[in-house]
Length: 232
Image (cartoon, rainbow, N blue to C red):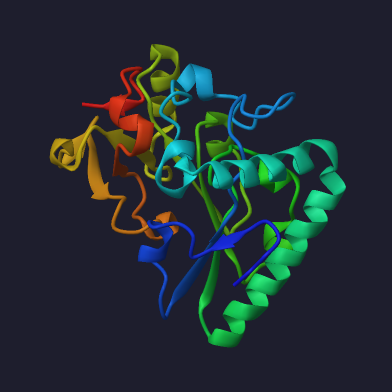
């Protein structure tokens, strides 16, 4: 399915959850300091994830893919109204396609960014049939009342004591925390006192139980990360 900004079936992990029940569309933009004059990941330095960003993983390592993501980011920077219009068109078409197929439309808008989408789109009001979800390093977002169909998972890092403390202070039986481990073999059964669940079997984070650590393992440049973003 070809859309303006969203990609469907372009991510190896999201496709693990696609099938007869769910179909996922994802928006990839250029992350921190990749495009002049804009930073779509304001917590990247404090959280230490800039060097190991998943921007370089999988198809993201291809120059043509990065150019396409940068082009979308420039549109966001220079013509926000047109970007939002194209996004609404994508969401409407994707919703129509999924409902016709009898499957649940799922949308992740921050594939490689950390935008407050709840400020730009009336998710529950305009798109109640769509399940939105994202990962975030902005702890303040996890503490907010979000649209009923928008699920956020906090992203943990030990790159700075300040950041890791903020995340752990926010963790409770209503929030989840994604942790990137060095390898599959390094993933424990519990972490920081929380039960660990497999976050790589699919990307349907809104189905996870509450109050757990979502275990991921390093990919792309993250495999060599020593900042504290990758654990183990």
